[in-house]
Length: 495
Image (cartoon, rainbow, N blue to C red; front, side, top):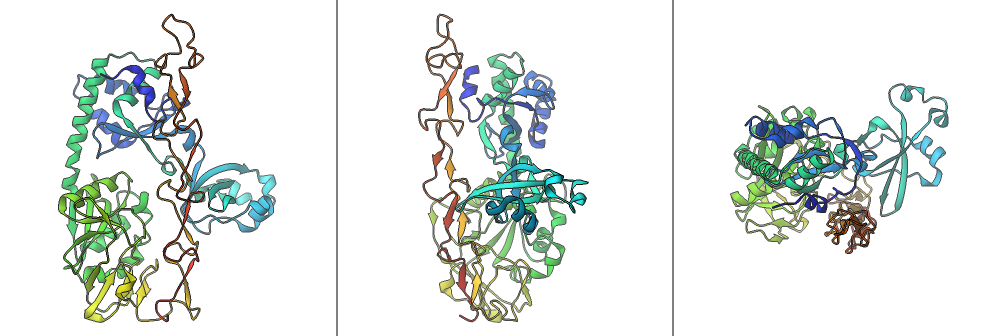
């Protein structure tokens, strides 16, 4: 049986902050289904908290479809300043140089950071009134292998709010106890237990989500790539460079090779829409290989992996441009060299993440994830490569590295580019409930607990209250293995 104090051992719960409670749509729908049974008070009390201020730092709570007894939340204090630079070229060079001086740098597309401060109109100077009519200028600050960087953006050009913050997982029972306790709502252990049982049952029903997977081929691939088919223009699916109507002509190599190329699609609960997709290849060794996963919700990546396991498919270990490793149907991560035979003559080709090396021999062509298998083109153009022309390097003999876009490094997967790891013991909160008083702040005789001076918490012994250095990167960046950190590669067309 869970105790009230157990709540405060969960990740992030002990850091308190006044917040207006907000639930993700899927979590709110689950609560409403439980409430409609008519015998669950906890679900009703939780729904009544939406929009109310409660002294917790846990917010934007959503379900985790692959884990029946867990939920995900985003800390309010991180949401307040978090931002992501999604639009290359949306910064202001001259203004940044004038105001920021040597601190000014251009962030990489997709770089995460914070909005450090607003730029008053008088500091920006004349000529910027058009921005301040509907928005404002802000300083975007981030950290990477080069240290801190700063750049000035129109706030509208930065993705901010909950979407920019990585969610934290916690058991549903612990989170619910904490929310209700902080809201001053009394409850019994049996009420919480019954709610948890009902919650897990509802998530189990939603696991029928596996029935929403389907595999399409031929012209259906074009439809699934078109952004009008998407549930929402968010997540990696919403940021796909191949989602635009102008890209429909690029997919001939997929459409005309249904024997070796198909598409795994996760249908949305919204009729006629999809919320995820991943290419499915059949290579010359007969392996079914699921390529990079694109989804509206990051947690749905795990559903694709489960679908791959259940179907006997290989799948990518990390959802990026890397050619390897893959995870076998048995669950082992391996580096593989794979060739997919294709046929046909095409004027344009799509951007490819993994099987990007293309040997163009008409009806005897192939795609491969290993350049050692021979290739004529590297299909990493976001504007549709024209295979009939050799304009790759423009005579310069080298190309911007397609793996790191010329930066020479990648964001570290282990620490998600932060350079720091959350402590396994405290989940990055850096505090733990006091063992002497079980978080009450009082001793057995009612006096102030000497172990925590009455606070009910103490510094986490594992991390000492300090961030843990990643150890596998430099400030969140790792050297690009493809170009050896040079940022350039030899042109594969002219050598």
